[in-house]
Image (cartoon, rainbow, N blue to C red):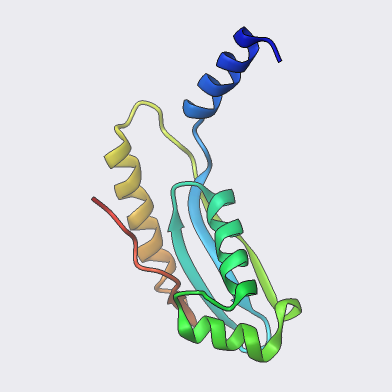
Length: 119
C-alpha cells in the first residue's frame, strides 16, 4: 500500500464518528432486556458477544442466563441509535446518550447491562 493512501486511511479511522446509541442484549426465554449506552455501537455489540461466549461477562445475572439458555436464546443489537451531532461537543453528545439510556431503562423487564464509565 502506498504511503499516501495509508495515511489517508489512518486519518479517516481516527476521525470517524461511529454510531452512538443503546445496545440491547435480550434474553428471549426470560423476556429480559439488558441495556448499555455505547459511544460505538458496533464495538460494544462485539465486546458483549465476546465476553458472553467466553463466560467472563461482568454482568453475572446475564452471564448465568447465557449459560443456562445458550446463544440461540439471545438477540444482541442496537436498541436505539442516537444521531451524532457534529455541532455539539463530545460531552453534550454523551450527556444526550446517558439521558436516552435512562429513558430506555424505564421500560418493563429492562436492566442496566454495565454502568457507564465517564471521566
